[in-house]
Amino acid sequence: MSGCRRLPGWGSVLAVVAHPDDESFGLGALLAGFAARGAAVSVLCFTRGEASTLRGVPGELATVRVAELEAAARALGIGDVTLLGYPDGRLDQIPVGELAGHIVAAAARTHAVGLVVFDPSGVTGHPDHRQATRAALHTAAGLGLPVLGWTLPADVAAALNTEYDTAFAGHPASGIDLSVPVDRTRQYAAVRCHPSQAVPGSVLWRRLDLLGDTEHARWLHGQTTNRDRRVPGQRQPLPRVPQGPGRPETNASGRPPDARPIVEDAEHLPWSGRELER
Ligand SMILES: [Zn+2]
Image 1 (cartoon, rainbow, N blue to C red):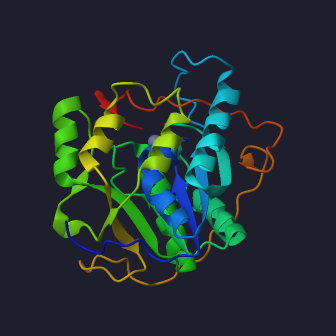
Image 2 (tube, rainbow, N blue to C red):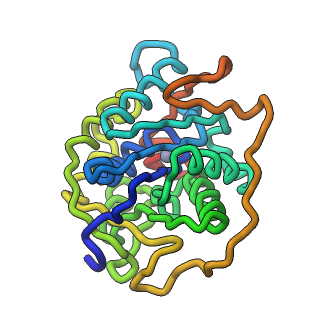
């Protein structure tokens, strides 16, 4: 693999994701790595993952889902969780500027100096992942924040797609900026906090096996890369923070009255005829 083998020394990191469990299944090892380096780690999640089932886990769907996310955050060393109520599976219908407003607010509140997101491909191919990253890049352009995009090596993506008929997107070594050694102990603990989603035999486990003790990322904005792929440094007007009753915002210290945690179908959702890891 190419590129740097160390995470940036950010003091405060904001992860921007689409679904509960993205913070663990996808970004978990990287976020735990930041926490281990002493960074304050926060997560902004746009949907409650309601396009899912409990897969036999007892309880009321809303209660179970939020509890899983909060437990996983603790396992990863995440100190601040913001959970929004945008529609799972239809995030790409929400204007990027509206989503970015929430990121601006979270970044300001947490004093984030860098964002961590899924690769613009969505990694698993899920449109919600791509939209969350679009919003993060829109925000980063306005705030001048660097953005690190989690990705897979192309050979790992290809192996998964062959074995599971999935739609993972990876990058060749020449397109990867960071290949970072990781300790997956906290990530596995966080994954186990999502029992309704981390079902046995799912592609998640195979992906972690194939990745071994290394995670991979690309600079999407604001850092010197070895590929000259940066977004031009022109700043854009900052989006406004959305207001109104239709967009409940929650965090670890207090939930709005109408915040209903929803379960997502993590590993095997039919999407365009294929099974996705969400
Ligand atoms: Zn997801």
